[in-house]
Image (tube, rainbow, N blue to C red; front, top):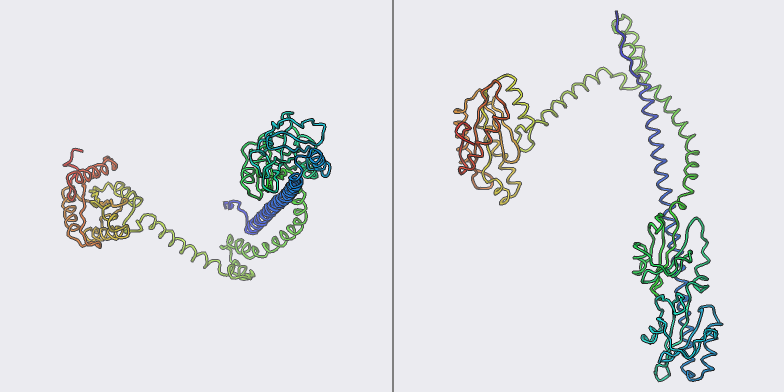
Length: 525
């Protein structure tokens, strides 16, 4: 009874499967790459837009502050000639307050800190000594000044701009100043409030103390901002953009720019989620445009796979009927339109031969130390398995180069490698063809001596020790070796114990002064 062959996929299905899988992987890769590119572009555009917007607002605020200082400077020049005239003081303070909407209040204070005039007059502060932080700073500085935000006695959060008043002879008379009340309608609201707050985006302004001077949420005005790399950068005078997580834990794309005149920082930011919201529909559009092309490509690949696989499929079918008499004729009629199909048998035989050769070489390389050409630990283990399987007694020489670290430290590792190669050559020259030479690692070597008793192995070890001691070495000095000898008698004795005894004998040789041979049967370690 003929046993049917096991079911296996044919070449056509395999080729088609590989092609389809490759096409799907390429499509997925392209789709993913497109997604990453589009995502990167959206984020870059948002970051650049926010940076440009923050820079524009910073320029506007800087321009306002500069203009406000110029107004105060002009008033200071006017007041320098009429500081003792109350009508001049009242007129100039009202002009400053009414002419522009730069300030919520204007005041003129003399050099003793007494308020001489205010606008609006309803403040009723004339004649009082100024107690405000901004006023005290202005008296002390005697230069144009923009104060840090502070709470006024009335509980208002204020930024105070001031300019000193001097006579033409340089005598200090006092200062003229304007207050911006941050929690009321003010010029910052006018400059910054034109921002269209779409998709959760917003702007805010901080001063050098990290206090919020402007924020779309009025309740947060005057509060302190916590750790934030963006704010750290902008308060150091930096301008740029970056990703940050805000105090609510929302990932934001922020642009920032400084206001150098006041030491403030302006940040414009937009939620990452809002920025990437259009990406889904964009990628669906890409997928819709790509799918038809991908389907046509798959159909073309299917046809190509069919024509490629057909000659091999027919050859495989005839190979199952090689015992039939017309098989040769039928094979001759198969149209092998490409070289691989026509040369299949020969190519397979050559391929198998080459594969076996390479596997043999790889197997040999896996058991050989590349520096010395001796067998490595894997080769040692294989040799031990072979000897024990045959119950063939053998002796073990465990040897180590004395003070090898000194060679490496003095002459370098390159010379050390040459010394190791020289020692490997000496081992070969003093060994029998049946001996097994191994490098156990570093400067340690193992020699297996089949069918050799321990006393004979000790003689071989001594001869080898003398040979090495008198050999010329590449670094110009001589080297010595210490050796430990043990014997495996066969039977049930553990190989690990015999190897351990050889190591103990080697250790004993090192401890006794090096450059000698110690037999395991002689040591009490």
